[in-house]
Image (cartoon, rainbow, N blue to C red):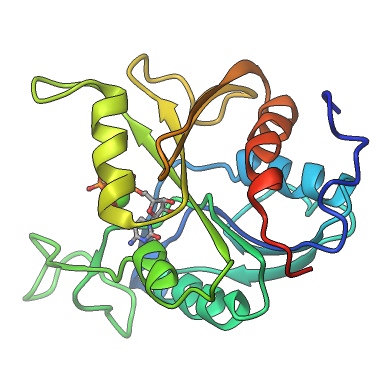
Length: 231
Ligand code: CTP
Ligand code: CA
């Protein structure tokens, strides 16, 4: 593991991490999903355990075996992730929302498998907005609890990557936002990653490109000194 991983600077810190990508059911066998592999969340968990934290991982559809030493809570949909995170956040000093949470779910979930033929073949999927888990965790947070969000952004005609990210940090109200620049479209499913960590107090830290474990160590280097005295 990269520099700092041998420090026990998270000793006794209770860390709650969501990772992976939610799946929103359409019928008993189909879902709307996303390409998040869960690997960055896994790396955050691995590094936090190595640095002494007690880690609970709320894992949405992650294929890789869970890192050693974590408590894993498996979830499927955004609603399940919301419930699991809300329940577990009460016992956490740091909450990290690394999961890719679906913004929308199918409004209707068919009780039986949708079939071809017959009188009523589906022609469209109606969608309903999911709750914002991160915003709800921020609203319910205990004094001293640190809440960390993630955002994958591209620049566009309105603003650049960091401009969009600063606006999102303010909108969400979290303490830190880990920003992936996905303009080149090459983060998902790749082993390497590079991020910038924005803080609500204005701090900006670039984490050098590297393996997901190295990036995770860089992220914890920013988070750990901000963890409150309650351990
Ligand atoms: N997030 C969440 N609940 C949602 C959607 C997102 O908790 N329903 C969290 C993600 O886990 C991430 C952060 O919010 O930590 C930012 O996610 P992102 O998709 O970038 O933000 P959105 O508010 O959904 O904005 P956008 O319209 O750009 O997708
Ligand atoms: Ca979103």
